[in-house]
Image (cartoon, helix red, strand yellow):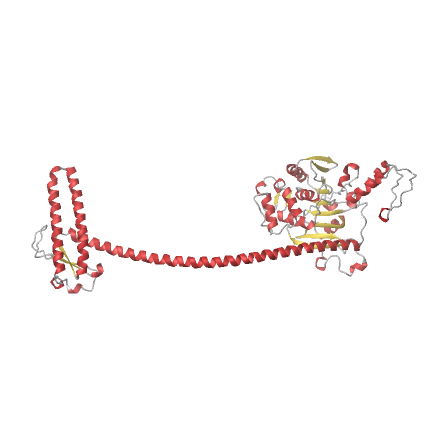
Length: 548
């Protein structure tokens, strides 16, 4: 998925490209893994080297990783082949290095770049990526690597002015990538650099386009609608010799048109030292010619060969002549020329192979979908079970919270009652009266507990007084005894009142009966000195049953 393939390192970035379907081929994945993007980004942008976005610093520009992934997939590079690759507007050299890793040592790899500072950045980037030696030859930088990686040649020139009639362009290139946007007229000129069966990928205006050169279509085949499709016929200059396909919408900087430098891509001159970089057909034919050189003019009668072996290997020219002759040939000199029918048959086989691969991928995707569907059903069932358990736990928690709240309310009521009873104990002239026997029994137990607290308080006061002054001890003992005696009298009174009938109680005023939570106190101690208590004239308190 475009713009979502950023990673923390090159491995993570390639994993994202594969995960989102940008790359599908194993050799493309391997090529991207072998060439780390961090070596090619503009200086100062190393921290963003693996982000899925384009980076630019002056003339140095590198596209987003998902663009390179889509373009390399569309180029249909054949691993370890003798394909020739041309990168117009090669820039940092990133995609040229990826192509070199995929195509192998027998391939040709050219790049055309106009700006000197970009070429210098390309040299430094390739040097950081892999150990190499650079050979400078007439404005061409040739990178020779220490391993089996094919040489990369960066040519200073204008990609829009490559001469078609000289150099390697005469034979054509099997794969062409355009690194900057061109218009439709320029595209028509660049497609002439394609060899039959070649593929070009590049941005045309605001679209990433794939163009395939089929060859000269005969009149008999034109009626079969082979060639460019109607909706793409607006690509100027393309005729039935080419087919085109729009891959995606893109936004590229335009390819620089000036200065209009005539650029010639030098031909690859054969010699025995570069024999390994030629196609297998050329290798086989050249080896046969050299083996037959300097043979005798008169040959003995050969044995009667079989039908497949009937050939005469006699050759009268010396080896030096053959070496000179072969130097004038190009890479595809010994390849048999295909007519339209043979080419279309080969393309048909390729399409069928891709269809089989796509069908296999579709079945695998359907199987993965079924597995995901089953997993989703299991997860839904588990989610329902967890939801029911969670609801049960929540209801239990709510009930527990309600019980705690009720207990807190009861504790508050008891605390209020304890505060009320404590106030009654501190008043020496107050007697508590209740309206029923059960309430009096509960209050008696509470007063007994308070009586014990009073003893403890007396002991604490006694120890404090002993620490302060020895003469205060008798008075503290007397105060303790007085308080204990008063509490005993009150307890005896409550016991007597508990045994008597409730009619003997002194009632409070009738006008205050509506307020059950109120406490009414009536002072009947008129004329009695403060600190003394009369048994026949007590202070009364009325407490309703709701207070308990």
